[in-house]
Length: 134
Image (cartoon, rainbow, N blue to C red; front, top):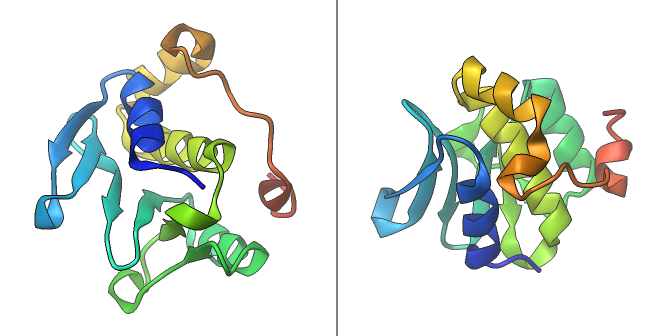
């Protein structure tokens, strides 16, 4: 299980990240100018961007009890991960991947040259990500 504090720690460790209240007063994390993660309720879930609709489908198919979507996100490369069904490493990987897609390219390139500087090194690939072939 991952907690809101775990998500906060990972998200705020990334360059340019800041926390901002979002929908319904829930926490979100952004870089200038875009959101890359937020936590929604009912159910409590981490919301992140993925590279493509194909990645979205693969993630949901690999772990449908943990990764899902709603009608609101149909046609968008966004997935939801149930906080009680994923671990910290899974959340870390989802958050970092989403940040890479949404952050300014200069921040991403600088971080990729030295990811350990943020205090969050790249996590080992977890099994359900490996099944996607990433």
